[in-house]
Length: 509
Image (cartoon, rainbow, N blue to C red; front, side, top):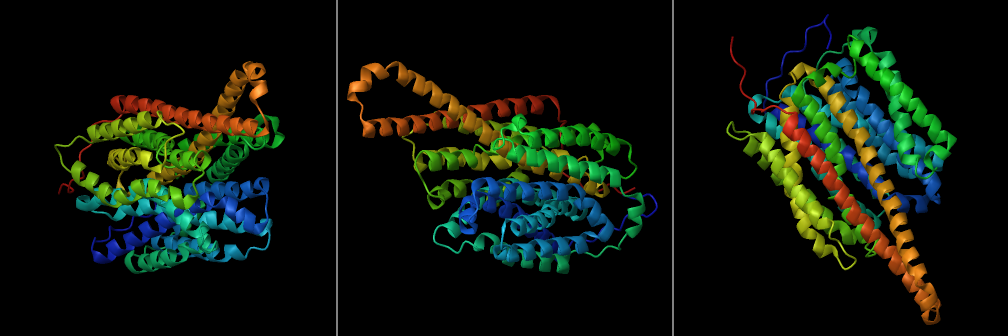
């Protein structure tokens, strides 16, 4: 990371270091779960604060912008201040802000505290990948990467059950306070287990200040535009137009700056390695696909069947809990020379495709039990995609390139999480409007003949039925749209990655 100072010597891997890495994993998982739980329970939180929907959307937008921005610069800060010290401070700050957020007296203070918490929480997932790439020896590296994969498979799916616990008869403040025990445990394990590197303040003289300014500005403007665009009617809003224009200017300039800077935040030259480029592309597209296992079933059960979060909880648990076993199991399978990880990824995509085909057959008669088979397919398919792609991507990264890779992977992952959520929400909304209009037009053509048979109750019942069918058709379309993402992923799989082998012990000179 700096030509003037040699990198720190590798720490010997043992029980103490393993405990420290577990602490980083706990902190990173807690950060991701906090983000999803607060988004799911936002309506309840707004009601408690007496805030309207339009005001409340800024709480989520501000947090998301801060979180993704922190992912960009966290690895650089970790190298500069030492991974151990920075991880402890970020985890403790993230936990502290979560503890005091319920006492926020108004919207302004709530948004401010969420921004500060987002900056601290967004720094934690990149530290997990940085630590895994640096400290894990070859014989456990894949199992460490499978632990990182839990942040993409286990974390998002366990959030719904936790949200339901705190909104269905629990104390609403637990939405924020649930992170306190795990945050403190994570910080303590990090303090005990990770080695202390020297502080390298001289790196500030080489800092990529221009890149940080352009990157954070561009990412923040893009995230806010994506999360507020539908509510403000996109380009019909001058604010959204300015934000999109600013992002369109800042982000290309940021990438240009990173290409030529001697110590960049993004080392774009890593993309010349085909397997790393494949990992970035696949992970970004996978975030769209994962919505078919979490957001679509939950939205269907809520909008069509009227389920409360506690009633939708089992569908999320069907994916979340098996990950604790399946992720390391997939790592054990691909940790053999005779297993080509590309075929494992292909098999996972086939399972996800089967789940999407089944989901496209959804009708208004489906209940929670009808979704269990689809969720089981996702439970097996998701780790079969994520764990091998991490092996492919990180296998071409040297340990001291870990901060560069971590910054790129996690920033793109955070950004595309927002893009995927926004795309699904807008897609379902527009398809629901289209199907509603189509059904209403069909009904209107027969209205004259049916008019003598209609009364106020009948009309209300028909309107509700049309709304229900429009949502069902929209969710069916969303599953079919997921199939198009799988098609792209298969094309990328067949053309881009080279055969990757499991990690091997270093060869003695």
